[in-house]
Amino acid sequence: MLFLSTLPVLAFPVMNPVAFAIGPFAVRWYALAYIAGLVIGWRLAMKIAGRWGSPVTPQQVDGFLLWATLGVVLGGRSGYVLFYNLDYYLQHPLEMFEVWHGGMSFHGGMLGVIIAMVVYCRWLRLPFFAFTDIIACVTPVGLFFGRIANFINGELWGRVAYDVPWAMVFPGGGPEPRHPSQLYQAAMEGVILFLLLNVLRWTTKAMDRPGVISGLFLAGYGVARIVGELFRQPDAQIGYLVGGTTMGQWLSLPMVLLGLGVVWWASRRSRA
Image (cartoon, rainbow, N blue to C red):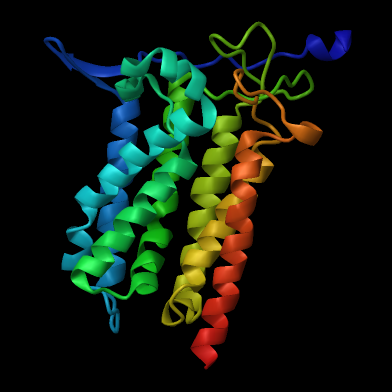
C-alpha cells in the first residue's frame, strides 16, 4: 500500500463555479450545463420527431421544453431531498431551493419528467410511448452535461483509488486520490447510452415499436448507474447499505426490471 500510495495523481482542474457575473447576477457552470443539456436535447428531439412517419410532430416536441425543464428541476431537487438528505432539509427548509449549490437526483428528475409527459400527452392526445421514445433518445445528452457539472463542482467524487494513475484529489474529498467517477458516469450514462439508443434507432425498426426505446433507456441507464456506483463514493449522510450496496444502486434496480418489462411488452404488442 505504501508503494501504491506514492503513484502520481492528476491535479483536479479547479474551476470557478461562477461562469460569469453581471453585477450581483451570477451564472454558474452548473446552471449552464443543465441549460445545454435541455437545449441540445430539445433540438435533437425535434429532428427525430420530424422523421417520416412519426406520429409526433416537431411542434409538439417544441411545446414540451418548458414542461421538461420543470420536471427536471422540480423532480430532481425533490428526489434529492427525499431520497438522500431529508433529515438535513427538514432542519434547513429554505436550503431546499438553493439548487445552484448542487444536489439533484436523476431518479427524481426522471419521475418529474415522466409525470410531465403523462400530463402533456393526455392534454394533446399524443401516443404516450411514441413520445417517450423520442425523449429517451436524447435524454443521455442531459445526463452527460449533468455529470460534467458534478465534476466541475468537485462533487459526487469517487472512491479512494491508490492504484489508478488517473486518480484525483478532490477539494473537500480529503487527501486521498479518488476515481473521477463523474467522468465514468458521463461516459456510460451519456455517451455510450446515447450511441446505443440512436444506433438502434438508425439501424433497426425500434421506433416502429413504441416503448422499445423507452424500455431500453430505462434498463440501460439502470445498468450504467449500478456499475458507476461501484466507483463512486456514497453520500456521506447515507453511506453503504446492505451488502455494500448504495442508494443509487437500489433506486436503479427497479429501472432495469421495469425497462426490460416495457421492452418485452412493446415487442409482444407490436407483433400482435
